[in-house]
Image (cartoon, rainbow, N blue to C red; front, side, top):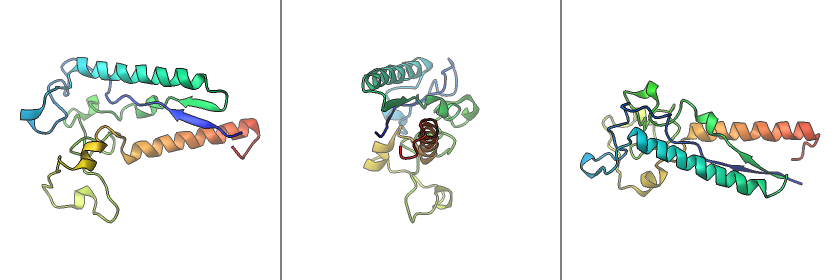
Amino acid sequence: GGRIFVTGYAKFFATPIDGDACDSISFFPIPQLAALNMTAANRRRANAIIDAVNHGIQKSVSKAGSNVQFIDFDNLYEGRRFCEAKNADDPIGANNPNVFFNDLKTVLPFPCVAEAAKQTPGLEVDITDVLQQNSVFHPKIGAHRILAAELNFRILRDSIISGNSGT
């Protein structure tokens, strides 16, 4: 009698504008090795892939029965993606908490370690670190919090509507 919530993916990039701050940058921090600039066309393709994946997930979930629900939370990321116009001075926003995705240069918070701002000034991120590599494009903690709040809201709403507090 329980419910299963299946989430889709949020688009990584704000709506691309030809010639914006991201058009001539790469997400790889070593310019000599950066193979792909994040042009508006590349970002449009990446966002379209996310839409296609979400459509496939939603289609599969719709066949799973009434206790399984697809959650499209992409709208919760509006204004918090890579390449937002308001972040033109730092379009990737690796350590900007208002950008919801990690980048190779994101300083990840660890328990018992000082905040990035309080660490040694000029700290360089070791891009050979496996944790850094595997965290790229994954959501930051703020993104997890907003998704958890959305799921909690839906569970509460569904339990009130159904009159069942044991969902």
